[in-house]
Image (cartoon, rainbow, N blue to C red; front, side, top):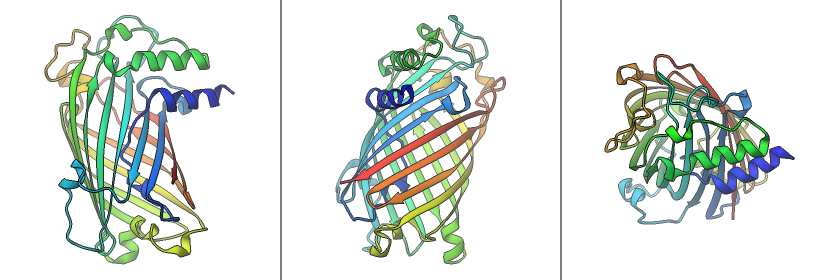
Length: 321
């Protein structure tokens, strides 16, 4: 019962958006899709670093002229385009949440809240997918991280986190993300082994990355093609996904504080922040009619020298209407 209560609270109190282009797949050809995303380290019974995040995303396949879509333009009539809006909250804590003081050489308490607009462009013929996302928001007490984590811990009977009074100060955030995926070497290889590049800039974080996406399932087509043929309308489609990427990190406000604010809570020297980081994720996407479920396990490398590898799970649930 507590598990259902926790899920319900996360959905209501920590609305968020995570850019997930796979969630646009819909076999019933409906225009709208709503997706709820929950990420938490409860799976591995840890409560440190990136401790939780939730998202609410709305997609529309016929949306035109929104800001993110104006950036991605294509004259190809065969291209598939969709856009969406959302809200996301992400919460970060030190390795231990049971110390009331600021911890030296550790990640500070921080949380951010972003309102976002994203657009995705898919060209099935070229095995090309381009996506971007614009976000504005706030990091600091105004993001509600202390209230959200404390409330959830009271409900599930976990220790109440101490030290939120040392969280990073309020600061304005503007964020832009870009990602390009391109398959090569024939249809089979292009549909299963997909290199990608991505970049993120703004006052939240500045980083670039390269990686490889591997996908296998019972229907071996690109996601753009999934959404069109009627022969898949009443089929259960599953897809195993593995993704690994290496990133160069130049700035991270959740570790270093806002660009235009001074934070006494930061006890982590800038030289201790690791500029080369990696992330690995693996899981399953399941599509059936208007419904979509995805579960992912993610592994993040150390953010800073004295840190440890962090593991957490993520659940996405979507439906079309």
